[in-house]
Image (tube, rainbow, N blue to C red; front, side, top):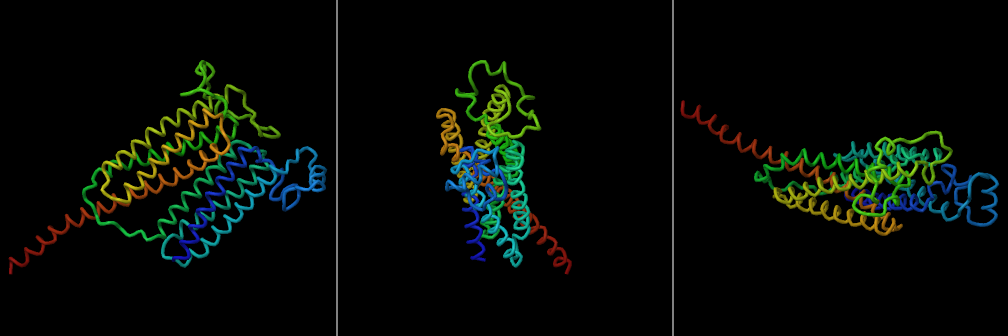
Length: 356
């Protein structure tokens, strides 16, 4: 079991690296650094030397060969391939374990889907819908790995604490927080995929007069049939609308997640639950700060990568928090059931004794 936990830990770290490198690849406009898949200009390695660059340009005359972008893209692909092999190893090993087999199988299926989405990202020339789906897949992979690590870890139950009746009422808010965060991540991916991150330069929403140009239909309308979607195909009004929606979503997500964290800290008696709530709160503060720096600094590269990576970690932490709330609620219900059954069971035994 210990070796499996080490394998899952290493895969978690690798997943974080792949997510960060994927964001770096996208933000350096290297998503089409290699116009073919799975190779790069017909080779297993990116073209670096002059003769390789000339051969690549001759083979793909419509592409602009950029060794820097090609290298970024291929490093991302190789790391993603290594991540897939690690998930495959987890699946094979997990078949001999008492728990976690279902999650391991789901992880393997998700990795296969992620590979297909990675291919379509290239072959469909960065179509925004595919890019957002690929982003979602990476975030889901990280969250599922975190869940698997908890399932395989020394997850010894804490003593039952019946003094947590308020947790039952927190479950709807917890699920709402997951839905809101997923929607905000989708808006963030849609903003990035349509190259709308640097459209609005002022706080809190956009430059003056934005409401007159705002169009919900334009924000989610995507013309199809383009040869490439690199650098975006939507007009300014549509990109501005997408950006404003992402900022509004950030305000809503911050309010919902902050409410959940504060209520968890107030109502939870479990140390583990309070620590998870604190982790979600800290990641939320970091994410909001990085978002503000993105606006003020006009999307600095490494800050934008950190913004993407923190969003993935925030989702994983929130998923673990919701899991822990459910576990504590179930334990509380079991404890109350035993407390209720105990006296009644004793009274049931007293009847026959008195009759005797």
